[in-house]
Image (cartoon, rainbow, N blue to C red):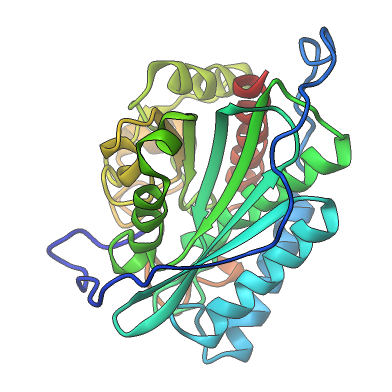
Length: 317
């Protein structure tokens, strides 16, 4: 998650209009009548999500300790995620831009089939800050979205709506990659997105369970999932406007998402209902070198990963 405007470095440099893409149609025939009504989201194995986090940690360790925009660790992260998606049968697109004098990349993955005029899109930023490997911020969201996409492929899911997944570059410099993507769509392309789901920091070590309240349908979908677990949620306010849902929201696209907290302090009331430590930040390693694989709460990561899949299945049928 990027810093607030007062605390972050502003993105500089014009965005270059360059798109590197692999061929193939992303629109196909909808599934047969009656086949999606009973489709239920699979359980997302948290071990698989953690395996992706381990790979992102290894990438950071081998590349100066970070996966930041314009650095080798970020490009290696894109390569890792893209290879998994390509092998699973997704049509992947790499979108190139320039910010702060460095080249950045967005990775977009389309699951063939579904109504291309009704797109359910899920995304997360893949870049870290320069000061650390960014495993909670935002390897956690990136790994969970990746594993959800792979679960779509494993299950052979053919929803009524079209599924698209995204990993954004240069979020930490001011939502640069996601803003570039939204602008590149044009009004017609934006109108085809029936909902954008954003996942930024979902495994915080002293976690809260926060749900975006921007769109009532998406919000209710997530709240219903957590209610089924007996887990109370709160409206997300700490990161409002500070992550990649903001460009979509500003363009009129319905948005929603999940968040487990950054550098705000957990209150006594929150500790009473969620556990953890009152008076301590949700993530004491936010934007620091200690944001490693040791900086993840497995329970929060597991619950939020399953919630992502639940929402993707529910909203795409």
